[in-house]
Length: 71
Image 1 (cartoon, rainbow, N blue to C red):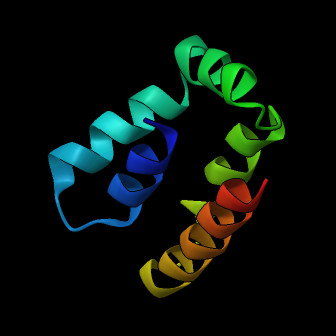
Image 2: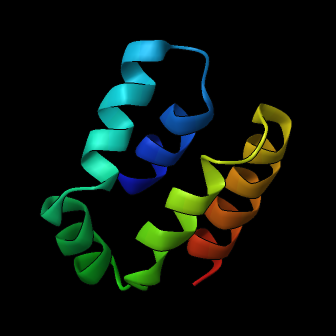
Image 3: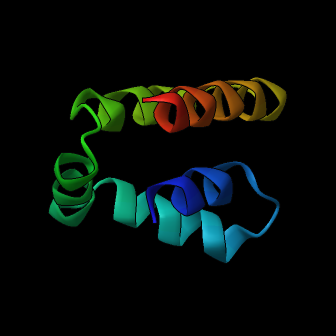
């Protein structure tokens, strides 16, 4: 669910991006991070990521997902 939300944040679909932003800012997202063993700071990192250009967002999203999948 978390990886899907990250992909949706940088995707071209406006509604999917909006849904991903809502999810990312929710307590459910933090609960999912805890269950998956991901750091709660992931929420802050993704908040900062959406402030970047679309090209930078895609690069950062790839790096974040690689790091999450490696842990």
